Amino acid sequence: MIDYEKLAKYSAPVPRYTSYPTAPEFREDWTQRDFIDCVNRSNKNGAAISLYFHLPFCRSACYFCGCNVIYTSKEELKDRYVDYMSREIAIVSKTLDTKREVRQIHFGGGTPTFFSAAQLARIIGLIKNAFPNISQNVEFGVEIDPRFFSIEQMDVFAKNGVNRISFGAQDFSPQVQEAVHRIQPFSITQNAVQIARDRGVKSVNVDLIYGLPYQSENSFKETLKLTLELKPDRIALFNYAHVPWLKKTMRKIDETTIPSAAEKLKMFQSAAEIFGAGGFEMIGMDHFAKPNDELSVALKEGKLRRNFQGYTTHNECDLFGFGVTSISEGADFYSQNFRDLNDYEKAIDEGKAPIFRGAQLSDDDRLRKRIIFSLMGSFALDFAAIEAEFGIDFEKRFAPDLEALKPLEADGLLSIANRRVAVSETGRLLIRNIAMHFDEYLKKTAVSDRRFSKSV
Image (cartoon, rainbow, N blue to C red; front, top):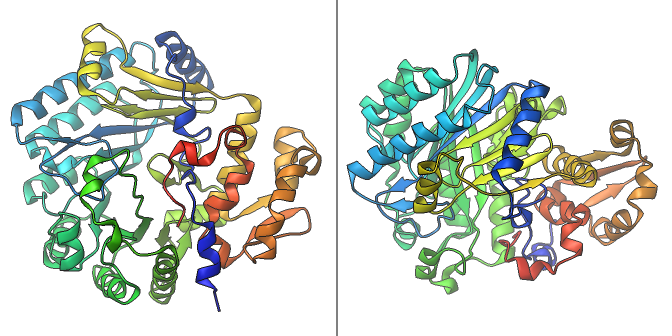
């Protein structure tokens, strides 16, 4: 029997570890020269690449959303944005070897399908013209708001090889939907999934959020059951990150209606049980997939990794992001575009890549990134594997970190034995709290000062 009240003590601001170092450590004195040098090293390594395109526009605010979003109803603003993204691709292509194989393409938002079918076709055309070596087996994914999704848009996707679609659902309770300003009856989502299936999309993901206002363990079970009726291949189950000091729209949420940490843990546990009974395996801290899905296979083979889009099977690729706030990632660097649209456009008008900040990874950063991502992805840490890769004595190098895990071991979240850390089923609920003990930057600055979202 899990003592949820006891585990609730671990609810604290903790990074989500979509990167290491985490974004607050990125330097704003990161220059064009830094970016160009990193891209040149990436070219020399010759790894295949993933491409991410941030399409930031939405019609109106969903109060739970923590994404970088621009609210508009103006078609000309979207056309202008595509123009600038085209120019950004041309600028970056002067340095990036665009003949490298592209194995993954992803459209994120915002609401990518807030762009018209014609606009989406234009964006895909720009990509194909700029990157001639797109793999025949490319993974092409798009995030979709079912409220803004048409057959015409899906026809564009089907024609151009989109094979993974992620539908945002969050919760099917009318009360919850009203509280977060996103009215989306189940029938709308069901119809959107059917449109994708009818046009041959092989992988459908449904995004859910637990911890929203007015949710309870019982009410959320109804959402979980309806989700299974959609017959998804993957499910993402995110912990609501309430950060009203960063996102003004979150201030519209009545905080007294948000479930407690203990209640949120129960909701997640219910989801794990219901999805498990439905044939899904838990992947990392917030994903579920069928046993034959690529995520499940990657987990079993130790190839699962994490980036700013969540969990990915493309561990071998360097990532290059385009559009406002997009992030690029290579073996030894991160680089992020401007978050403000005016700053983004100004840089491009000056003929520059729209770089806002970034980070050059030290040897210690790369080592700790490997450790943290191993825990986040596979819920385990093999000392010998780390030693072979980095030429260190793990127990000597990380003696203080291992000692700091002892209280978590006493609470049943993990075990340390046979030169290995193994996270328990209960510990999976709190994997961020475990991984943080290997975060060197958190030891230098108080966690509360960083204003990360709470882990529970």
